[in-house]
Image 1 (cartoon, rainbow, N blue to C red):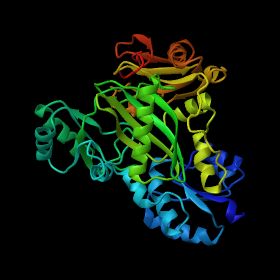
Image 2: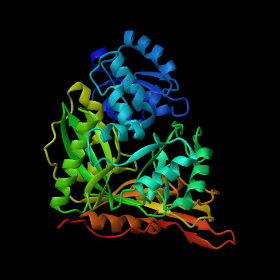
Image 3: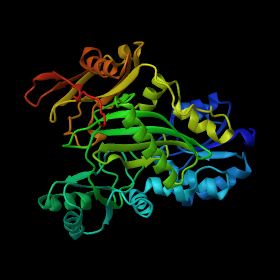
Image 4: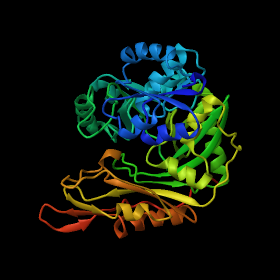
Length: 433
């Protein structure tokens, strides 16, 4: 192994390791005991199995790996690995994003506190430490407002309070979840602290960006479909159907946000809402997007954000145009069923994956499982990602694929059969006068 061409990956999927190898890099992989695979063992040049979320275990290990086999850069594009990858960057002065900046992304309370000192219009937020804090925040900031974990993902543990009557219920849920990983989620993230913050009205979008030496390029604005009654994401579509005035506002809001947080290099995934005050940031992550959004972006813009993230530290990343040009459309549709029904069987996945316009099919439901009420992304049955002539066509094609080709067969407690469907979404573009 050549240390100058060696990348230390803190956590990774099979796809991530494969793309690092395709770049001609040597891969030193730190992988959690529950996440190892035969493919990673085959592809990685050096594999260490360790709970990479624990710095007390990672620090002595990477000091040994620094000496042999050696590495020139460290990164992670998975949420649980971000902080310790940043610590490694600081420890060996590798030049990547450091711990201070990464914590601003990972800790939503820290992010809000940091922004409050820089932006007079920053979203109002306070830490949640006791039941009385809920009443105080409602009185000072008004209803509705949001309670959420400071460092989780996928809508886990997020609650909306519409009035004082919701406080006891939400506080009970916070106490139940605090200190757990929940019983529904395969994740390495521990729910610890919670945050109260102003509820942002308006349609939701995510912004995929890449930064190099402080130059931020907005690659794509992704249209996101949600429901006011829960926090599961129902669909994503690229490019977002917004007019040029709104798009410029989004670009300015996101690049300004990234500057204020202090990030200079790497990929970011930023979630925003567009309301009466224009675009406002919900949260951001210095990693790639989930939910197959990377596949949508690659299909429409020809830009692979996973490869960009891996290539950047070695000077192998392409220089992106200021405004990448879209070609066609692509969409993700979530698969949902009626709560209480039981999954009977799943057919058509391989047939769908073989179709030219299908980017991904990911069905997480298993036969025998009961369909849960939608609360967050982990309650969905799966997703499909497809291409289309434009955004609207892709959304329609994704909905048709679910039920026509990909069939998740359900039965009610009384034995009535049914099929899971694509979650319904609204249709329309956003413009500003």
